[in-house]
Image (cartoon, rainbow, N blue to C red; front, side, top):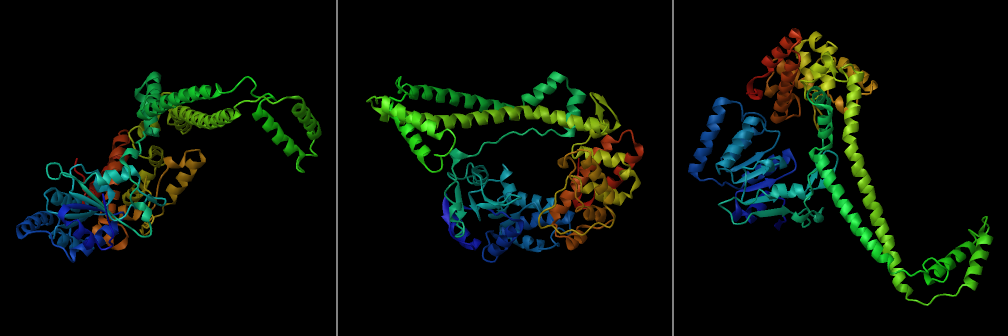
Length: 518
């Protein structure tokens, strides 16, 4: 691992030019594009025959998608790709991401600026990886990379059959000098399982599993296995602590706690001084206790012994006691977590019974409908049974459903949709008042403008001009909507009118760049 002090990517690439191709990790979509453009002003990595291969692949893509490089700054990307430079992030359209990935796989890109999602690609190794920064925004705050995150990205360095070693470079930021030199493979954070008890999981278990099978599922999943393993490890540590505790106790003689013990005598003298202070001397019982201590000190002879050994043993016992208390707290937390899955199951089951989805194991219409859904099951079911999906215009239904399970980004700008979203908001408020947890009712009005416009025939150009979203964001919104429509289609087998409406919405929006092929 080496360090680079440079803001200009050209300086960094010059320092590592003997170890290309390189993945240059950047934590920000716009920054990947900016750095790629800066590098493109000074570097061109491709020979003429390689440029011809790139142009051929670009032409094949443009043949199917003529406008792919005409939007925004994508013309710059077209030029950069012919220089062996590219960028890759979630804001790119799937078509462009696919093209960039294919060029990289064919060794026609020498420097690729990318966000951390690219690190998950097992087919994308590099001779080197570079980090523009080791700080990232995690949705709540800027923080340093975890060891696991760093090595996931750094691990791209080193191509089997090409490189004897992989090279990792970190750009030093003078504002945050502590961001380098602390990553340790031996301290990579563990991956912990977390079982999510959703309405669909409860309905599926009740529909297809016996009580014993449900109990095993809740108590013997991967997360529960990790908790049992942690419990075994804590028990082993407690046993070792108990051995040390007994060993430390063996240093004490029979006089421990008696007035003849030098340690006990010192304790009594300290108590005596405290009771004589202005703070304690007038408290009830202070005089009587002082007289008692005085009599003990006068009448009891001190035993001569190596009391320093006892003092050390006493301190060790105190430290062991703190450790033991900490381990016991961890043990209690693990036991509570093990019971938590069963409690969550019962809690969600109670909500479903309260809302009229089920009664014990008997399924009603709402329960059968929600059984076919896999996202925000209660919210979508209530939208359907409230008649909103059948009464409102199709373009409005598309807008409403696009907001299901959507959490807007902190810098997103999207105009309000041209319809009244209050029926959904009112329904959501009623469900909250009925005790449904907010995480079962995630909905946003933000994507409504995108889905409504797309349904009414507008294209990517219109949406890019009127929102702050990028192609990838828009495609993601519509594809998520298409998937939800498929789920509702499966769930509405007993409601032909609703099924016909959702199929019509899908037919209209499943087009152009967002088309989903199954």
